[in-house]
Length: 212
Image: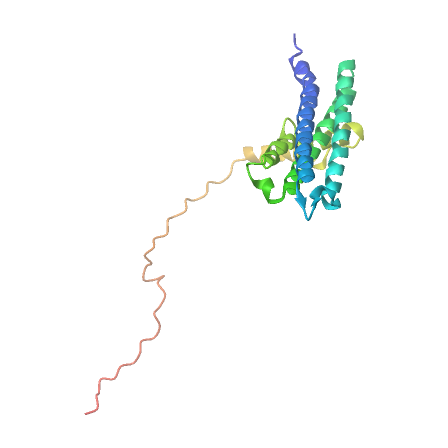
């Protein structure tokens, strides 16, 4: 009783862990599709995966995926141990890292496929939209950065938040003040009156006497 809000916040940590797992799995899938393609695609007698321009981004993505997985496992372990504060910090970091690597992996997968990456047949173009969801839900990356800055680093609240709280009473007071009623705007007719119509200019002189 009277603990509904506490129960609500208690579900945020597993929600972020679940979102991190979703993004990590999506990143692994995108990486596997890209690796399979660059291994089998040959140009000038050699697989395109032998070129560092493709191999290095894929290797970097693999490293970032493993880092996100480790942070997700740490968050899950802290949550199971009952460390709510530690789990909250790790869950937010895991969700952030996993969402970022999912977006990077989807982009690398499409780029590795070349023109085939934007077709429906190879099944990687849709990953760009699916991976983007991890940056937005269930919590945006900006809110995670706010959490890490305040709780992990001990930084003060953001200036935007404090400015909003300070200026809000001012807006409330101004809204309560009576204001003079503005006169209604009159609709201007498309037909101008003679007083406002611009002068056509001086008339050209005409001669009444014609030569015989």
